Amino acid sequence: MEGYGMDVLVVISLLLVGYLIFTLDTHKENVPVPVLLVLIGIGLSFVPVYREISLTGELMYDVFLPALLFVSAYQFPFQDFKRLSVWIISQATIGLLITVFALGGAIYLLGSLFFDLPFLVALLIAAILTPTDPVSVVSILKQSADDAELAEMVEGESLLNDGTSIVIFTLIAGMVAGEQGYSFGSVTFNFLFVILFGVLLGLVFGWLLQWAVHLTHDRHYQVMLSIIVAYGSFHLAELAGASGVIAVVTAGILLSRTFERSAVERHFRDSLDGFWTIIEVTLVSFLFLVIGIVSAELLLDTSWLLAFLILISYLLIRWVTVYGLSNVLPFSRPRVSFAHAAILSVAGLKGVVSVVLILTLEFEPIGDTAIVATISFTVVLMSVVLQSLLIHPLTKKLSDDS
Image 1 (cartoon, rainbow, N blue to C red):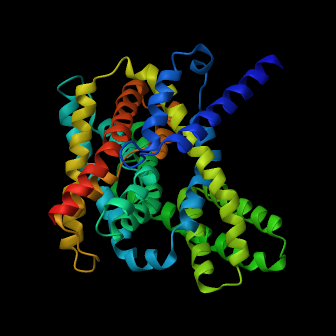
Image 2 (cartoon, one colour; image 1 turned 90 degrees about the horizontal axis):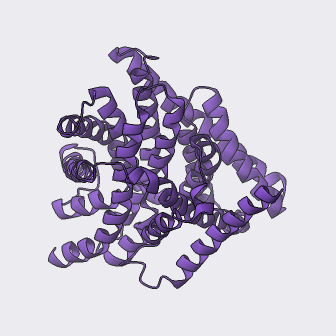
């Protein structure tokens, strides 16, 4: 009982730290909250009681991730998603595949300078590093950029990017572990099945929610329904072999569409925002603090130079990919300038989803997971700190010049 009480106090103290940072940080555009939380987490790792904190990939994937994805999806305006859908889908599919293979090749070449790194393992690291987490930069972009559409593009892309990244990671992890074949046909079939079946289940759950919400006008039960949809769509899809991430995002997007088509659900939207916004801020505060605490030990035994080179490679590859796809594909809208592509590249920083994938490595028989985890964690930490700090001055500079 004493140990249980201490665990509760540790969690409460972390939430208190998160509250203080969100409240006292008056220069969020220059020093974003996630940066401070991660750095404070690293500092707390030297305190014995915090050093014992551990997060499992299963806990983050099954409990934290559905909530964060659902709130991001239903709060993203459906009209913005519809207007940017071609751009978002092309970046989260074609662009993502290009980035994974190009970054995997770069990691393979860079890694060979330090140690022996198989190409499939390099691809696995690339898949870990492709999810984007714009939570700390969207508000900065809205304040700093001359084009409000940039923030919408970053936020919209991340909705689908996370899902396809996890699907690709799962497929590559299966190949590395020898559980899955290498044939183009089987990989393509699995990729399409996982995504399309996830979309189908998400549509079903989203439709059920918009139908069931009219059965009761009690806002408490309506919010309860949203919890059932968020976690039910996610876990049923996972149980069926589909993408839980794609399912919950699809359900959230369908709910966003419902809100925009009818004013009847306004009180339901207010109730949802009151509940899910608190959940989002609480989880984000807790997770970034824990990311700092957990990563501190790994950072003592890593190659900072290799991690920095990988991060630079990622930014350059994403820059070229975003600009290229936006201007080469005839059906992609809007067209993105070279300067705006640079902003979108830096805005695609790493975060919670990448950490979830790193932690799930403990369940994958891929050999030396320590190397993969150490490299990936270091790049994620660099990304959170450097890209978050860079986005405001870069946006102001490029916006003023254009």
